[in-house]
Image (cartoon, rainbow, N blue to C red; front, side, top):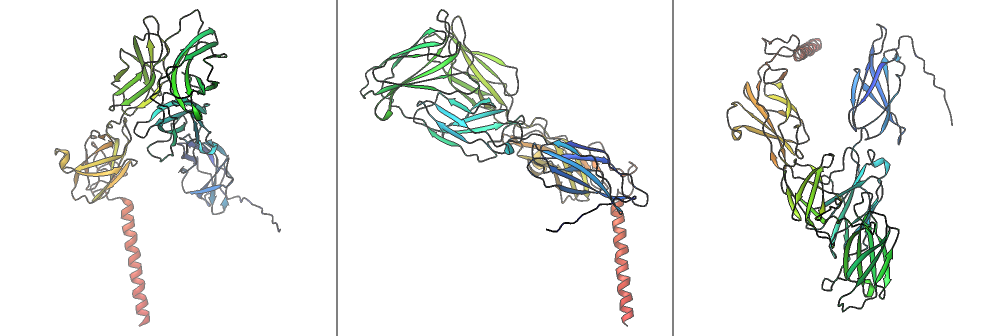
Length: 558
C-alpha cells in the first residue's frame, strides 16, 4: 500500500484563531453556536467559516457546516448525546487555526421505544409483569420511573407508576378468565412516550379461569410471632375431587415491585405456617383449591397485616381502585372495601398532581366519590385508606388518572409582517395554558373588526406550526386574531391586530404603523425596501446590456 506525507503550511496572511467560541444547548436536538470573527489582514479578509462537529460515542464521522456569519443554529442532532465542536476561518490565502474544542451534551427527551414485557399468573386474579430495560442508545436520557398500563377490551386503561429500578410488578384485583392488555413505558425527567401518537404493541394475557358456581373456602390467619403466621382453612360442599391447595402470598403497598410466594400442598393439609415475613407489612393471601389438571375449583383472598400479637392490627386499604375521568375538571373514584373482620366506618381519599408533593384529602362515607376543581389534561395520583372507629390503616398504592382535555388559552406574542401588497406572514407562540394537545390554530381575518366570528374568513393551521402565510388579500387594511384548538374545542381569541398592507414592510402590531426600515420614521414612499429597489435596478441594467449586445452582433453580421 502506498503512503504519502501531507504537510499543511499556514501562510502569514491566513486568518487568526477564533475567539470567544461558545456552544449553547437549546433542546434535545438543537444547539446555538457563536464566536467572535477571526482577525485577518486587510488584504485577505475572512470569506467564510466551517463549523466541525462529531458525536463522541457511536460514530467517528466528523460533519461540517459552512457558515458565512459568526453564529449558526445546528439542528437534527441526536437526543441526550455528547458532541464535540470547533470552528475554523477561511480566507483567500487559506484556513486559519482551529478554535478550542468544546464538548456539550444535548438535552434529554422521552425514550424512543418501550420495554419488552413477559406475563404470567400465579392465581386467577393476578398477572406478574416483568420487563427488560431499554437499550442505552434508545433511552434518550436517564430512566427515572416506569408506568404499567393494563386494560380489558372494553375498559379504560389503569395506570401504576413504579421506580426506575423496578423491572417486575404483580398486578392484582383482576377478573378471572379475562383477556387483559398490558403495556410498560419507561420515562425520563422529560416524560413518557405518548400512547396516542404511537401504535405500541400491547401484550395480551388471559387470566386463569375459576368455576364461579363452587363455594369459596373459609380462610383465617393467626399471628404466631412478629414474622410468622399460621393459615388454616376449611371447605364447604365441593362436588369436584380435591387434589391439593395452592397458597399465594405477596406484599401490597410496595412501590419497589411485588412478586408472589407460592406454596402447594396436598389435599389432606388444612394448616400452613409461613415465616420470614416483614413486621408491620400488609400482605394478600390467596388460597386456591385445585382439582384435576390443576383446575381451580375454589378460591378466596384475604388481606392481613403482620404485627405484634399483643397489639391490634390496622385495617387494610381498599382494593380494586377505579378512577374514571368525567370531564376536564372532575374524576369519579370508586373502590371495594377490603376483606377483613374489622368494621370499616369511613374512608379518606388522598390525591395530588403527579409532579406535585402537595396532597389534598377528602372524607367519604361510601366506597366512591366524585372529585372536582381539578386541572384539565393533568395526571393525578389517587389513593384511599380505611378507618375503623378507633384507628386508620395506610393508604393504598396510588393509581394514576388523567383528566380530559379542556380548551386552551389564546396564543400570544403574535407578530405580522407584510411580504407584499397581498400577502402577510403571521407568527405566534403557543398558549400559556394548553390544557390538552394543540391540534390546530385558527387564523381569523376581516376588513371590519366588529363583525361576529362567523363573518370572518378563517384559515386552519396544523397544531405543530407557529407561523403561516395569508395570501390573496385585496384591501389595504385587515384585522387579524387567532384561536388555539384542542380536541375539546377552540379557546378564546387573541386580541385583534390591525394591519395596514400599503407600505407595511416591517412587523405590524396593534400600536405600530409602517416605518422606514433604517430611520424608524414613516416612509413617504410606501416603504419600498432598498433591497428590492436594488434588485429592480440591477435587473434593468442587465437586461439593457443584453439587448445592446444583441443589436451589436446583428449589425456586425450585416
